[in-house]
Length: 227
Image (cartoon, rainbow, N blue to C red):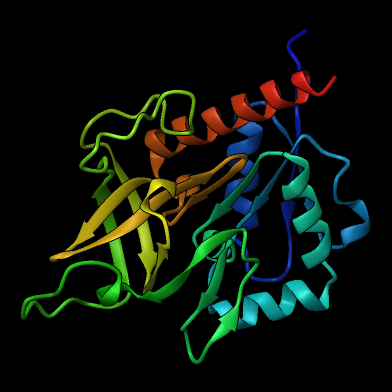
């Protein structure tokens, strides 16, 4: 029988747990919604979903005691996927409604979307950015092999809904960009075992399922390697 991994989904009160859980079940994964840190770590992989404001989300993670366990799990090398706000948590700080510290797993900042790269050049961009956009490789044609984007082809679109964007200090952590008007922003990031998607793969139809499937493959490979 093929190995069926367990992936824990962090429930801190701001995540889209239902759609994500359905997607995981479709992929043959045992998905567990975790709302207390004592249960963390007894798993093959972690997903941090999220919608809403950065400051509120970090406050909820801290109040529920998730911060230190998440940092320990990331340091231990278990695969972690952050989705939308969950991806933003990985960064050093956010400028959403003031300055708020993040997990600092990836050095960088979270800024208003129109400040993330390029200038609107007079375009009146509607905020939040809601809709479908293709994933774009960096100019240096970063290799997507053996990542969550392994099966993604040129111009495949994913679904975004966000007002802020992540800017890593080092561009090498950006796997894919997307564009809104004349602004370019990080759509997918990777640093070792840490992955982030600014979009919602669980709402991105077959393309999103392919991305989640590759994350599951990475989780399985890591689990077997640890045996």
